Length: 109
Image (cartoon, rainbow, N blue to C red; front, side):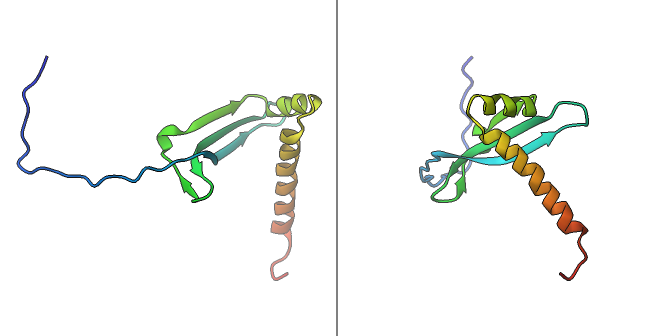
């Protein structure tokens, strides 16, 4: 079906938009969920990014990565000679421990 045209009372003109490129990714969200005795899951959301201009691209091009058993994946990858995930997970735990220790310290250090 071809509907008839409706003419606007006033023409709208939009200025051209500069073309931009986003050759990189930015971690917009990192969520880790776990419970004692259960598995540790992680969700990572990335968006297009230009590292040189520090500009994020459109959210419509985001990418979600879901890891169902983060600890098992970290151990498996480390056994394959890819230890970065295991080191990162250990680093997060160590950072939380450090932050909690600083939070417990008396004010006015």
